[in-house]
Image (cartoon, rainbow, N blue to C red; front, side, top):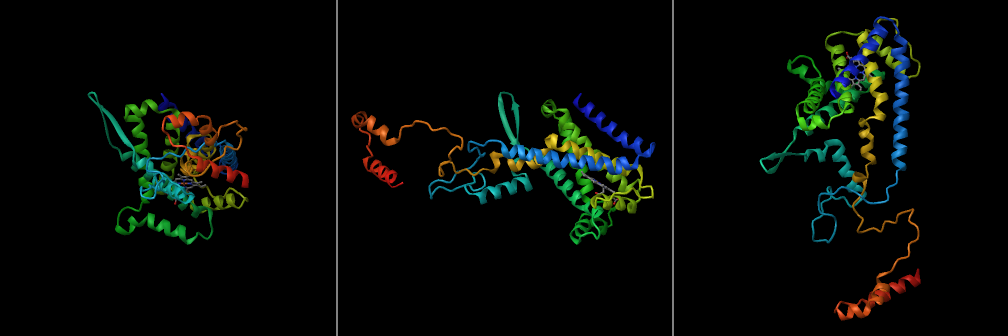
Length: 343
Ligand code: HEM
C-alpha cells in the first residue's frame, strides 16, 4: 500500500512538468519560478530546523558509547567508541559521516528454532555508502552547469568519474551506475525483506522513488534523449546569477522534468527523514564527549536544592559508621572546609 501510493505520487510528479512544459509551454514556471520557490523552502526550512534543534535543551550527557571510557592510566581508553575530548568527538563524527562507521557494525538477527543467532550484515552499509557517495559526487559534478569557467577540481572529478572511457568501456559515469545500483538495493531491501517491509512507511519509499526518478531522468538525458546543453547552461548560469532567462532554443522537456523532480526533492527535504544529513551534527548521542565522570556539568536551569555534603552525612552517621568499622575521612573533610573558606 505504502509502496503503491509513493510510486503513484512520483508518477504524478513526473506528469506535471511533462504536461506543463511539453503541452502547455510553461517553460518559465518550471525553469525559473518553481526551482527558486523550492530552493527558498529548502534553505528556510533547513535553517528553521537547525535553529529548532540548536535550541533544544540538552540537560544530560548522553553520548552513545560502546568502548572503554577514559579512566585509570593503565586501562586502555577507546578513543572513538567513548570520546573524551572534543577532538576525539570530531574524529568519531568524521568516521561516522564519511564512512558510516556505526552502520558497518550492523548485525542481522535471526531465530533458528529457539536460538537467536546474530550474523554480520554488511550489505546495508555497502548499499548506503554507494548511494550517498555517488549522490554527493554527482552533485559536485553538476557544478559544471553552474560555473563558468568550470573549476579545475570539478573537471578533474568529471575525468576520474568517466575514466572507464579510457579503457574502451561505454562512456558512462561510474557514479551513474553506482547510484542506480545503490538505490535499487535500498528499495529492494524494503520490498523483499518482510521485517523491513513491515517497518517501512510511505515516507521511506517516496524519497527512494523520487531520487531514483531524478537519477533515471538524468541518465536518460545524458545517454538517450539529448538536450541542448548550451540552452541548459544559459538557464542554470542565469539562475545562479539571479538573472534567469529562458533560452530561445528548446532545451527539451526531459530537462524540465529532471529539475522539477529536483525542486520537489529540495522542498520536501527539510520536512522529511532526509534531514538526517544535517541532523546528525546536532545529535547529542554523537556530538557529546563522554567526560561526565571527569567534569562537573551543572544543569543551567537547576533550582537551588537543599543537599547534604559527604562530610555532613559522615557527621550524622559517625557512630554507626564507627560501629560498622567503616573508615572515617576527617582529613578530607578538613581539607574541604579549608577550600570552602578560601573560595
Ligand atoms: C538532487 C540533485 C540531482 C541529482 C541527484 C541529479 C542526477 C543526475 C544524474 C545521475 C545525471 C546523469 C549524468 C551525470 O551523472 O551527470 C544527471 C544529468 C543531468 N542533470 Fe542532474 N541531478 C540533480 C540536480 C540537477 C540540477 C539542479 C540540474 C539543473 C538545474 C540538473 C541538470 C542536469 C543535466 C542538464 C544533466 C545532463 C547532463 C549532460 O547531458 O551532460 N541536475 N543528473
